Length: 88
Image (cartoon, rainbow, N blue to C red; front, top):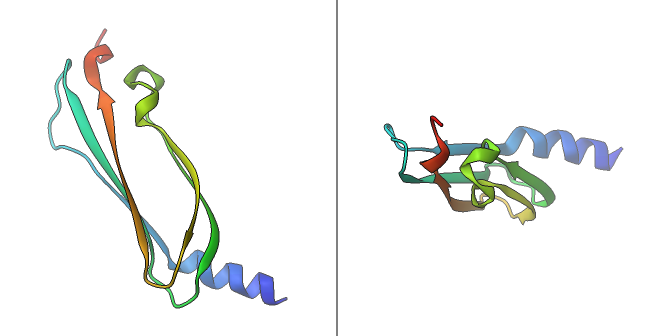
C-alpha cells in the first residue's frame, strides 16, 4: 500500500520540458535541451527517461537513462541532432 501511494504522489510531481531552436535548416546541427524535474517533496529513486528523434537525425539525439531525483531536483541533457539527412 505504501509503495502504491508513493508512486501516485511521485507521478504527479515529475515535470519535463524540451527546448528546440525556432528555426532549423537542412545541413545544420541543432541542440535540443531536455529537462526532467521533481517538483515534489518525495525523492524519486528510479525513473526511466527515454527521449528520441527520428533515426535519420542520428543516434546522438537519443536518450535512454535511469536516474534518481531528490525532492526539488532536476536533471538536464543537451543533445545534438544532425539535420543533414532532413529533406532527402
